[in-house]
Image (cartoon, rainbow, N blue to C red; front, side, top):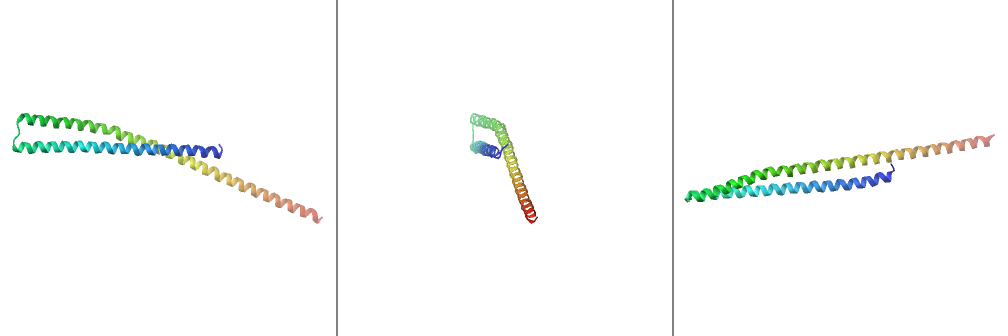
Length: 149
């Protein structure tokens, strides 16, 4: 494979790696947003529960208590579903992280291969140059030998 081909592949791999990184960042932001939403629901439930307690201290009818209690139970169910939903976002972050790491590994491997090929090409060029210098020196030596006869 030529160096130009490998450099083109490296450019494509770096682009894929960057896209994977952006997807990971986006998934992490979605997860944080989801957690923030979950916290807001929990805070809302706690506030509602506190209101129910305060209203209970000053006297609360059984029907009002039943309504408030049903609403809190509904919030509890919503929270339970939200906690289950968090698994999707956490899994998505993990999938994105694994994909990004795979792309990163592939890019690093190709960079290593290109560097290795460049070093080998440099060594070959240096050997060729040395061989040519040796041959040239030998030619000069032989000519000097012939002139001296």
